Image 1 (cartoon, rainbow, N blue to C red):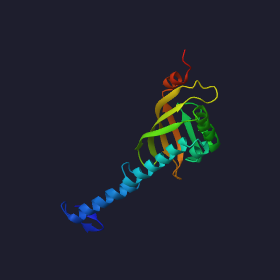
Image 2: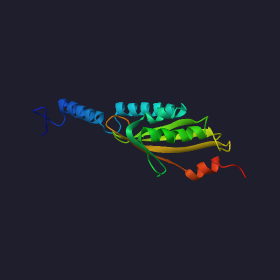
Image 3: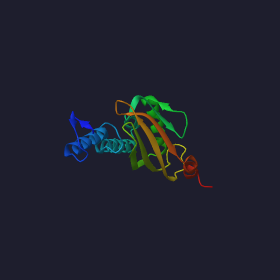
Image 4: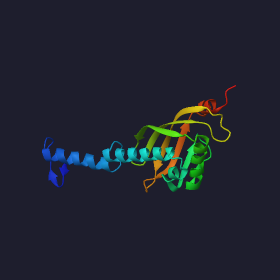
Amino acid sequence: MPYINGTHQQPGDPMRAQALKTLFLVSMLHGCAGAPGLEAKIRDFATRYTAAWCSQDPARVAAFFAPTGSLTINGGTPAVGRDEITAAAQGFMTAFPDLKVLMDSVIVQGRDRAVYHWTLVGTNTGPGGAGRAVRISGFEEWRFGADGLIAESQGHYDAGEYQRQVSPLP
């Protein structure tokens, strides 16, 4: 028979059931996927991150990353640190002065990981742009650091479809 808090417990004992329920809740709150508080915090984080992308202020995007965090787009060279992440975000904001990022979903995968699904909409009217409307969806795989900021983001979208949409019409 199991012991909980030094007391012998019978299988149908209400004290045992309460102790198991408490153990389950504690484990959820300490980082298991599905913890209500954790999901709400990450959803709030993702909502604020989305607003930063829509702000036309690339430093606001970079502020969501740890000082030595990284952003890699489609397996390319990582932008490491807030200055490089600011530059990467600026590239999109310059190409799309009317840039809007929509949060499609965020999936919590544990206390330090989440997948953020997004859709970018805008008109490619920046320098060298063809003036074409673009709508492309993708996702970022986030790993959070101990500070609660993004330590690493692996971004993915269909580069071929993006290129088709931004290219001048024949």
